Image 1 (cartoon, rainbow over the protein chains, first blue to last red):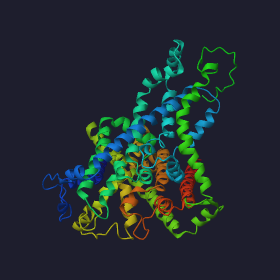
Image 2: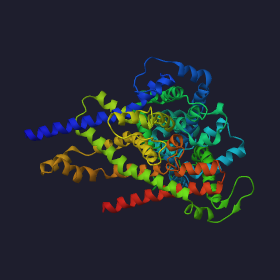
Image 3: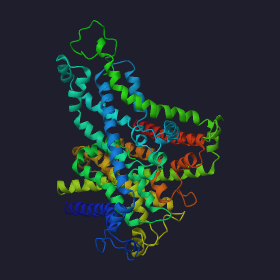
Image 4: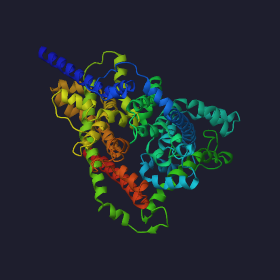
Length: 278
Length: 311
């Protein structure tokens, strides 16, 4: 038994060491990003590489806010992500409600159609979608970033799943009181759906915030860029502002991390249920 | 729900389900579906169908399109750059399945095998493991751009201080794809470990205890009891990894732009170049469909294989 105990102990020590190493590797790039954002260019490119900066050099942040479009990009991202999130959550809950609480013709057919596109890669449709944006005159307009991806199959799926668990009696009680279907939805269904709305909101906001290829295709005007599209342009052939890029990367990740820390449980639920990234 | 279909007699009492079968209300569900399906039909269904049509045409976007039948698809199998992209993406997918997934399982087992001291510790791990997953690919690429720097990067400095050989990661065609794979492992290790952890936590303790009573060693118990019970999660992780591997774009696009000499060219980067730099739109549409077809076929094979295995 003693040998067995020792063996268990050894396994635990090894497991701990391995985990701490993994944690170290996972955190390191973030620490380095934050540290480099407070370093002068000459300090970033000097040997030996130091994890901690020598002092708090704020020049990168000054450059980022003074000489680049970063503040504009950031606000663009806030506006685009919030708008898409609100529209996507609302249409998902409405459609999910219809699938969960009504019987109607073609219900199963329509639902299968939605499910079939759960993991549809954007690459299947990106060329004609771009053509459509050109035809509509939507290139370089925020609406191109907001509307086309506001109907997400995963949203309908999760909303339906959640609303199936809501007892019909609650809805019927409101109907008996003479409420129209629209009032029932607005006064009863929406308030009840807060948990699933939070999950969907986090999912849609994050994916919109992190979008890259679609903005890359439809946006050409620097001042209209979302932050994810703008940041890499600071590493162009003519300028290599690594410090500023790290500062911008740090600031653009911050909102997501803050929401994550506040609503950790919902966040994990959102991203694991969706299992979608980018 | 499916069993109660629309063949409820018109005159039946509406007491149980007043929401269905009544004239004034039958239109309601369609109105609720309308906003979603409007966006869905215009910006998803239509472009998907239009891309299908386009993939049979030669189209530069300037003049008229000419129907060329299967020419775009037969061009795929003769196009050395496409095949190179397919090869690179497949190597990447294989690494996701055979390196990343086992590593993630190992991490999950490690977390499970020792008693995490406090709840605070537990949530610390969870946050750390989730961080890469919620960080945008763009930020990840920018961070690693600096880490992979030949002279001043963190990685080469760590390697040389350990006495190991260093590489010009992003400019050496022999290791560039490896660099991309390392970033992928870094990105997805945590989230996949959390998936496995959730699976491990669903395995009842007494099953493992029973195995121990029967004289099974820890390793035997892992192979014979834990792994088979974990099969649904393993399948999920592997299918996800495969599907998303074939869509990888941002990391190689921003780190290496598909180079050097196409050694990190992926299907998605190739599609972007063909469609939006060379404006060879019909061919780009065919590449797009090939990505979807590959993902669907591989996922189906994995699901079928798992089913067979179950019997």
